[in-house]
Length: 147
Image (cartoon, rainbow, N blue to C red; front, side, top):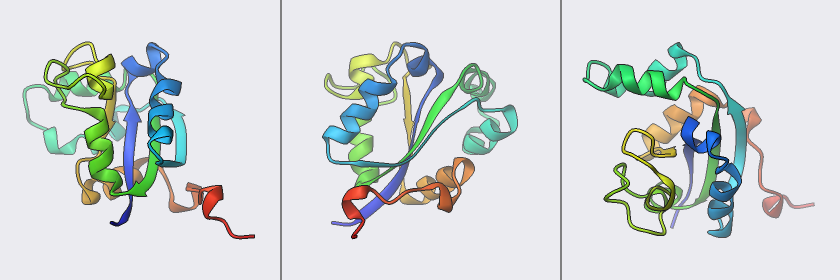
């Protein structure tokens, strides 16, 4: 098992609905470490960088408009097999297909407003983390610091 870092973002609907603490708590209770955390209002340029793979698709403008509609909470999460574990915890993009017990299965209202984003590969995680965090902003969890 490998220790990985992944990028997670609580989207504007999750922030508006006051789900930040509940979502962070789920990751912590699962043994994952939050090593970077910030609330930001994403501008259009940053949103286009984040979702560049969807440029040209029919839903691109709606996606950009939505993600820039309010503040988001960006996180870097670290733990064993973090990328796949976090993806399992958040559930399917479409909440109708996300099992109860997953974040989207419990909280998402629609496919468009699905509360949370998480990187789907280590490569994407590295790219997405670099959009919002500098390496020096990430902290080593206290449990790993040797005094």
